[in-house]
Image 1 (cartoon, helix red, strand yellow):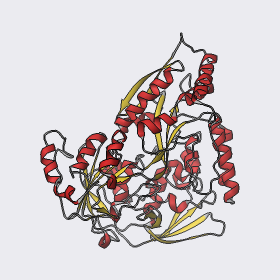
Image 2 (cartoon, helix red, strand yellow; image 1 turned 60 degrees about the vertical axis):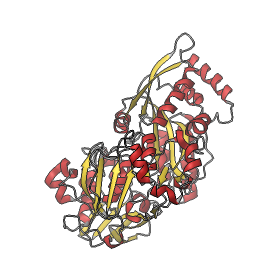
Image 3 (cartoon, helix red, strand yellow; image 1 turned 180 degrees about the horizontal axis):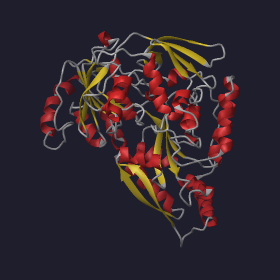
Image 4 (tube, rainbow, N blue to C red; image 1 turned 45 degrees about the horizontal axis):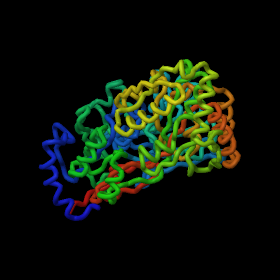
Length: 534
């Protein structure tokens, strides 16, 4: 357990570990006022809110930019760039009133910045993986498909402080969705001046609590307090340093030495030690997320449902969750986790009640029917990130699939390259994860739409898409939930995914970091935190 003596020993740890530990930064950033050092998992590929797709990137961009709504200390939506709003009786027209506030260069933020940003997001030339988030806006999907110009989007700015949104259907979850980075405003005056280079140091501006000071790729990224932020007087942290900590075991050592104040993710291999020695630092709580495998159905033989079913059968979820990660994560047999709002649940892979031996027997029969067997193995690859825990899980999956005549070569790459390969379809089998952008079942199920930017496995069934469309037109929450349930069961029966485990948060937080509130979305914006070292 962390005791008071831990803190005065930090300097001693740093000195004794310096010879064997890599520093968090080869060029330590300048420290100003109250400082927070965050181990942030991966290296961001960009700071463009329309091009990022990882939580490690959203942690940074969410400190810099504010959408119409923003996250409170518990990651619930509160007024952000919009002070207030009204909704029409049919729920399809929303009018937002932009609060008087400035970009960090002193230029006023206006409703036109939101019109510009949302049209830009849906422009096919932007190629944003999150464009589908705004398909609920009138004409959004048609614009994404290239059938209409971006100017046809159902948004307008009657004046600088009024932003009007026309929806295709009611969306009771809209205020949560508007906290997502894909809906953030873009500084029109900066983007038009610098184009794709607008996010570079020296160009980028913020309307949120922090602004970029320094970014040294694969070393550190430093944000400093934005004095022009509309609520700057309540922001306590002056400087926040984000470190790419892909080696989670090294990050744990840095955390113990006091070089990191927070770390995500934690190394599952060390969970027993952490529970015994630093339980006060552990933040392991329920999370709206799922880890899964995906088979690329655009690559043969994964277009054969028998192959996908066999792989699904062979994956021992309980072993992966209980023996590799050991974080208390439930084994996953569905796509939508429990606890999602307005969703009945109750869906599951049909083989859930079979013993693992029975599953292997059935998987072998399916592989034999597809032309494989003891004398003819399927040769394929499994793509994973370089995180140590994911490497261990990949090795376990490799062993499991060998039992059903599949020989797997593990291909490890850093997190940016891994997800770029998933996006482009450059894989056979791969590990992935999804964290909800907002608390609604559609946020999970929309990933499997035929034209979704996150449909890594290229699942394509018009009847599935039609069910999702039908659900979106349903005003009654209970009836809508039942239709979404039908869609989920259809995707499970098609083995569109191989669900593995429902996620929990994996944070280490020093006891002297105050204001940290575990929540289902696992966002703790630096704006709400402060440090009390004694």
